[in-house]
Image (cartoon, rainbow over all chains, first blue to last red; front, side, top):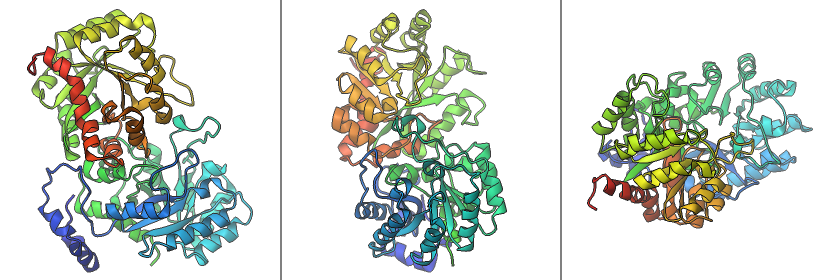
Length: 298
Length: 259
C-alpha cells in the first residue's frame, strides 16, 4: 500500500514524515512481498477490538498494555474497544467502569471505550446514560445472541432510539466464534440480521456499525443493509479472495471500517485484506480512518 | 519470505474468469499481491467440472508448471475409480497429490486402503480434509483421529491433516500421536494462537500454510502465520520449507529434480 499525500491532512503528514513512513512508502515497490511489519500510515482506526479474556482460551495480547503495544506497533492510532466481560458478565456497570479506566490508562488515547449494554438487564437505560455522560464514550457495543435476545426484541428498538438521542454510535456484534467450534455446553447462534434493516431505517439519527456481520461479500441480506445510509460494517470476519473489493461492489468505502477483532483474531489477517484487494487511495483511506472519523461526534 | 499456498480450489464461483485458465490466472494475480508465489490447486476431476475439460486442466497446469501444482480430488467411496484417477493424473499426468474432502469418505476405514497404497506407490502428497464439529460431522467426513489411525498404518509416509480439525485445540492434540502427520492451517477463521499451538505441540516442521482460497481469503489465513509469535525461521518453514520438503519425493519421481 502506498499513501497518497494528496489526501493526508497536515497533522497526519507531520506525524507520518516524523516516523519516516511516507518516504518509506514512496520508495516501496508494489511488487514487494507483504511479509514484514507494515510501514506507518498517517492514521488508522481499528473499529473492532476487545479487552479482557475469552472464557475458553487465553490469548496473546489479552491485557490492556499488551494489546495497546501490539496495536501501536502495527500503526493503529485509535482502537474502538469493547470488553469481553461485557459479553459474559451480568454486572455491566462494573464492566463499563473497568473498561473506561483501562482505556484511560493509555495516555495517548489509543483505546477508545465502547461500553456494553444488555437491554434485558435492569437499569440498562441508566447504564446507557452513564456511557454517554459519565464515561464520555462515543458508542456502545451490543451482543444480542450472547445476551439472549433477537432483533425483534422491543427493548432493542428503544435502546437504538435512546442511543441515537445520546449521540452514541451503536456497534452490533453479530458473531464471536464459529458455531462449529463452540464449547459443547455454550453454543450460541449467529444473530439473525433480517429485522435489522427496518430497525435501522426507522430509527432517527442512528449510526449502526455491524461488527463480525459480513462473512461473505456476496451475502444479499448484508448488501441490502449496507445500502442504508446509516449502516456500516467492519471487515474482520470477511472471507473470500479479494473480499474487500467484492464488498465494494455492494456498498461504498464510506460504509466500511477497518476492524481486526483483536486479540481474538490475528491482527495481520485483517491488515493484509487491504492489500489483497486493489483499492484506490480514497477507498483505502476511507476504510482505514475516513469512515470512522465521519461517525465520531464532532 | 518465500510463500507457497498448498490449499486452493478451482474452479470457483468466487472468481469471474470464464475459462479455467482465466480463473487460474486471476487466482495467481490475487495471491501475488500478498507475496504468494505458488499455489496448489485441488481439482475435482472425478466430477463434472462444468464447462472445463480434462484437456483444459492439463493446459493450465502445463502453462503454469512453475507456479501451480495440481492435486487430484478423489472419493474414497469410489475406491477403484480413485485408484484409476491417481494413475491417470499423478502417475501419467501432471498432478502431484491426492486431495480428500469432507464428502470423500472416512479415511480410517480399511476398505479404502487401495487408494492410499496407490498414492504412496506414486509418492503423491496426501491431503485429508478433517473437521471436528460440535454440531456433528458429515456422514463421510474424517476427523484428525481418523488421520492418525490411517497414518499409523503407514508410519513412514507423511499425511496432511487438513484444517487442523477445525476445532484446532482438539485437532492438534489428536495428531501429536502420529509423528508422520502434519497440520494444514487453512480453511477456518484466524483465531489467535493456532499456529503457535501447532508449533509448540508438533514442532514447526509439522505445520503447513494453506488458505482454502478463493472461498477463504488468502490474507485471513496468511495472517495466522505472519502474526504468530514465532521466529522468522519457523514462519519460513510453515510458509514454504515444509511443503517443499513434502514435494521432494514426487518431484524426484517425475524427474523434475535430480534423484
